[in-house]
Length: 323
Ligand code: PBG
Image (tube, rainbow, N blue to C red; front, side, top):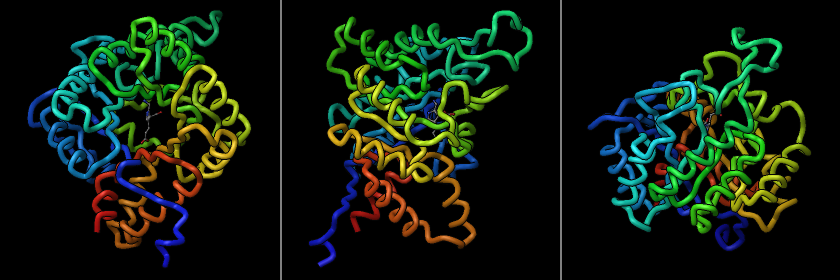
């Protein structure tokens, strides 16, 4: 009876698993703040992909952790960079049976940990005071296009720009179309808040900013909902195919709002690292039942209006749903 009247459905095909990829062989480095997750070398990633295939997940989202970081994030601009190699290996392994999505951003690749190229915040302050440095929006756009073409050339199935750089979707779309990747979809991190819930991810991806924070490009968590609608609308006008709200649980109202305003657009939600670590920590203490808590959370994200969920529990949930 309950199944007959069910309004909300969750299936493995809607879930995307984030993976952190680094150089090496046989590397499987545990991420302390995210029990059950690892930094993986490419050969270990392939094992994960086979598991994702057998669980019929919707896809994976790849984050690269390069050996070498510098001011511009050169590894991300090279066909021999970690993500380019990972995508080629992944597609050779899974073909068309699993969607391989790449995170398009620079914070994992730059030595300063910011999501783009830096320049003095105001020309008159000079470049010496690091607290006055800020991401140069338009120079970063050029690099985002170059990075996107690297991912596209390696065979990525979809690009997910996550830097909240103004104009990034339009610039990437035009760059892709110019090089005949007009079929390649873009999933935009459209409404991404400057959230405290990304803490564990920054350990996982070794991407914490060395100074300052990301508030000059990510959204203000205390500001309200209308600007999320504006961000989503802009990204859709610029050519986004799928839009995302991030984080998920503290922003269910934003998911709902975007769903209602843009009902015809596929909406994704990112159940982020902090949401994962909180439950893991409480479950390890015996304070929460992990499976029940996670399923309840993911159903609520679906009920709010997200069709696609990016979650570190993707494999677990697929198994739990099978039983
Ligand atoms: C930026 C990026 C971040 C996350 C996904 N892409 C970190 C940030 O904005 O600082 C966070 C994901 C998570 O917390 O799980 N490349």
